[in-house]
Image (cartoon, rainbow, N blue to C red; front, side, top):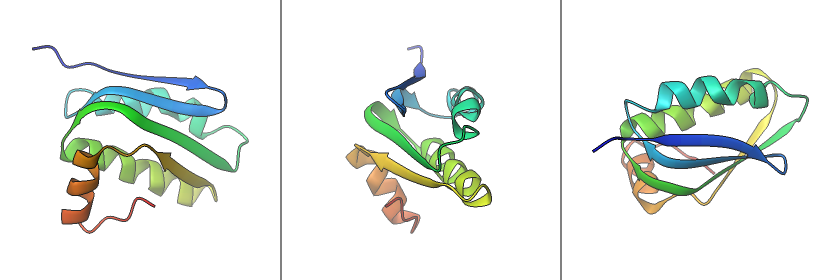
Amino acid sequence: METTATIVCEDHRLRVSGELNFKTVEALWKQSLPFLSSQQSSIDIDLSQITMSNSAGLALLVEWLKYAKRENKTIIFHGIPPQLQSIAKVAAVNLI
């Protein structure tokens, strides 16, 4: 099975879809940088189309949060899948 993920900017919101895993998160990180570095002070990221995630997906979200903090920006995650919420809870990571 091939794992895929996409990230697009629509209506001033990053929309992530597909699988967040060790094969996809590096490319998603790189693709997100132009949007993260924009002039916006608040960044909306829609995760409602994530079909599967593991700890690599959580690591990507944590990296987005760290980047935003360094740049004095706010990230708002929308539609966090239950699987990703469970991983964050076990890891004691607050995504809200």
